[in-house]
Length: 133
Image (cartoon, rainbow, N blue to C red; front, side):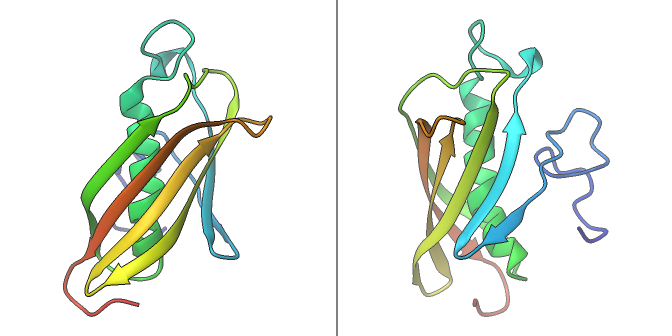
């Protein structure tokens, strides 16, 4: 990670209350893992919906950022399919599904170790400034 965005709630290493996500690219997928603790729950034993939304927003918007472009989320849709339990390692993945002008369309999902998808997301991410990929 470069020197910018060190305090990002999702990925900033200097944020003492942040999620400290680390990312990798595999084929056309952008991935991270996260295990939620009790401090991330809404109802007992279930990850708060805002944290789920944050994970999906980050995996999708940051993928474009990781490609070398300044990018911001223009639209975010989340579908909560099942409660996401705390204490289990979650795989969060995103991929680019389309592009129109400076807007990228992406999808993302959160998956439990057994393969169960607990939440899916769609995003439109806008590249700011220079032309896109």
